[in-house]
Image 1 (cartoon, rainbow, N blue to C red):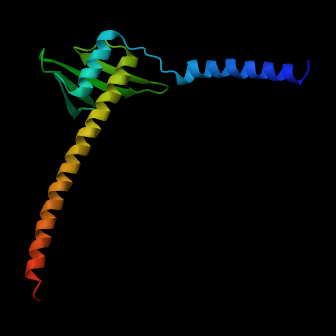
Image 2: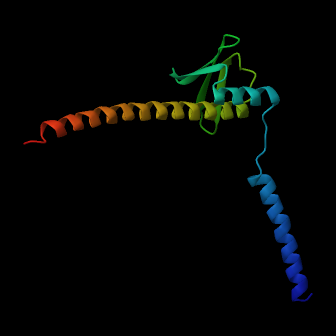
Image 3: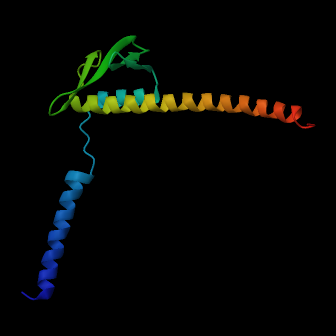
Length: 141
């Protein structure tokens, strides 16, 4: 075999290896079934669902349309993490629970960030008004 043949074999090997890496590692695999996917999307948009903050180690999910409640908790065991779902959504698998938990966590973080930004804006407005008053008072001194 000459150098061109070995380069062709090397290229073919790298191509097959790259496709395998892309398929098994990079390409997202969706293991979420249809109703869970829709529920997760609705929860992320807060459309018909209300999620309360940390409720006794878990999150309380209230379906405002059907008036049903569910609680999701994260249990860290020795070698794995289990997401326990109780209530109306207990039919979800552990993988779907993981996606649901992370979606709720992101929702809570975004909600907290918006609230904190709003409080900082109100505080900044009050400080600016006090600064303007101080400028008027100390202008002639």
